[in-house]
Image 1 (spheres, rainbow, N blue to C red):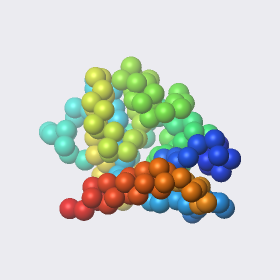
Image 2: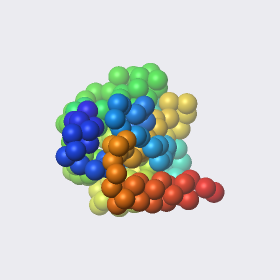
Image 3: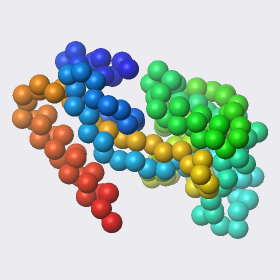
Length: 176
């Protein structure tokens, strides 16, 4: 993963990763958050407004015939794999359309009607015009992970303090 190579090479001090991984040599990785993924649909899509309440969960299988906006595997392999695995578990292989390097790009493509995608539930805060978010029902629930990584031997107090602050904030958020 290019980001981890940059981190190991000293080109960056810390990195946020959308993955749950074991720490590669020379790095320390702290898991911060695990959250469900939700469907992001164009607001005019029949499934965006088909439920009596938009809070009703949508079976992932209902998206079987849709074109999926996929995350670029190079930039977001964990999100790509989580989406693909959830679709396979729901009984279908996703029909891949456009590829997006970032979640915000994927949501913009959804808003313009290029397809649907799965995003971490926290992305609902990006109230993007033209996008409706729906919870997913069933055992095929995709999960998204967020971790922070730093060099194991980094002696910078700023880096250590930043990582500690982020970890404390994540722990407070995780507590009910």
